[in-house]
Image 1 (cartoon, rainbow, N blue to C red):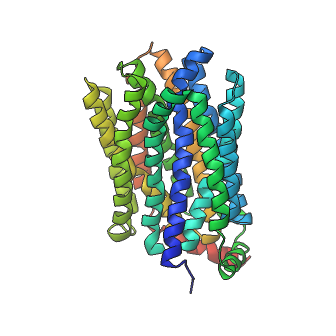
Image 2 (spheres, rainbow, N blue to C red; image 1 turned 180 degrees about the vertical axis):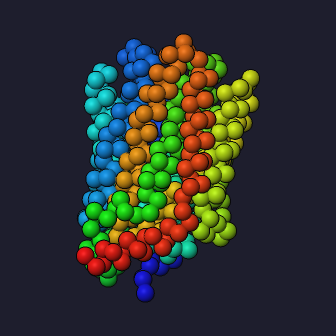
Image 3 (cartoon, rainbow, N blue to C red; image 1 turned 90 degrees about the vertical axis):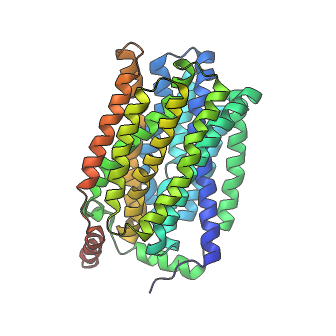
Length: 411
């Protein structure tokens, strides 16, 4: 019989992971607001702007499989602490960049530092929460992205107006390093729990990873989800300022609205997954993908800022159902010994999309002479493809995972 954390410890762990994800998302989203004054200071064109945003995702994606493997080998506590401290250090250094090239280098290293955090967090949830609670634990953790998004747009814009973009990054970096130190002490596991986890990790070799049922569909699903998610995150501040004539601070405030609704809906989706959709998780994701495509179309044809923000908010709600399912399937049904590695490989695909999407959208806008309509159609098609893929996922994921465990136990 597996031993999980006490109720008090589960609350503490959930809270810590939530704070870590808020900081993670703030640090990566703030660049989308800061890139406007950065672009003015360093005289960046559209392609350079897209590259500056994408460079983080390139290094972040490269670190995902390694970060997942390191989590399974060295433990989630070690990797979460090192990751948070590392990316916060380079967030601080962002404020000292002196050129476009130096910014690219710093953002690249920043992505390497943040890479292990996601798979280590998934492993922490798997280790401390029973299966029937993992959907809610996962959705609460993921909902922190929305709080980070609120702070990374509205608060970051206000901080840039008050202290400049350099001061904003410096403050965020110092705060993150302080929180990382707290993680190390608070996440210290009980000896019996640590021993059990170490013993379990020795049972399943990593070469079995790609034999897990549905792994390639999950990878494709995550890739398309992030094409949409990061396409919107990275270009909407610029779209509102450049195309709709909204000033920077007001743009940050308006873009906080979808994050607020998304935060609540992420947690609602987790409750729905645990209580109503057990074994049928894919249908919730498919519905979210379809709604996402519809609202993206309406966004492209919005005739006012109010309409645009309304459809963007509804799209954020759809994305919350679209996105929560993926990691819930992983932490519910993948072999426990490979949770970090599975999360790492799937997230790797997602962050490749994070690198592709901003650059692709920038190129599409350039090719269509500054028009955003083709970029929105690019996102609509991605949502429809994701719907088709997620519908094809088999419902026997749990059985497949057990089969993998039995096969590896015999090796």
